[in-house]
Length: 336
Image (cartoon, rainbow, N blue to C red; front, side):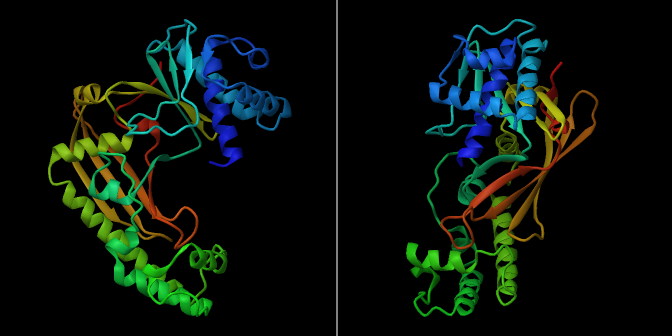
């Protein structure tokens, strides 16, 4: 996480907690309340400087209002300010983290802060397509080489020919940190050179096709499909709140537990398919029955299989997106 991204994350999460307390934001930042724990002094200093700078005023305002919504909600604190606010911090948990919780109020009310992002989680491709997010093992395997070895080598051949560097290994498996750096510099431009594009298009199509096929084979029964949908939507053993905004539209939601979800909904069908894009992408779509009235609810998303630091740089990731607006997702209830 970049320093700027870490700063924005800290603002959205900690200021949401301050909003649950209520009062004057500037005063709360100047003298941090004793109810708020796990926030280092250096982070409070960063927040004060960002607030005084004035450039992130809207972000502070949205986060503070979100916290106030959790305090006032009938499904939340019901107008009572919390006696204890715990910040999870910027660390990554050592094990599976089904619920993306950032704050906990009074040991009970858990809050996830979501601002201007459709990304639900960032998993390794094998963990998603082969193991259905059932663990948190990231083996660092090169997914492109696993599912599309021929197309992968052909793409590398095209890159090697374009660069014209005889120091690059003939076989893609021979790449090391030094030779990958050569490729990164050569492909720094956002748009690939014309000579490389056909091989890249073929590779994207094969990776998407094989990924979707492997995923579908693991989803042969409704039980496996339902559990995967819960993991994609970050539905776990306990309910929690999602507070944030998408643009200027606030997000104020209570996310059901798996137990609650089954009282209200039933998964009827889960489908995966490929879609054309500038990188390998797999779409997912769930048809859900709402038990109360028998209506069908459609929820959609997609997965980008990509390198985070440029093509041929390290192990690919599987970035999971939710395309359906949060408020329309089964199990995401508006916060009254």
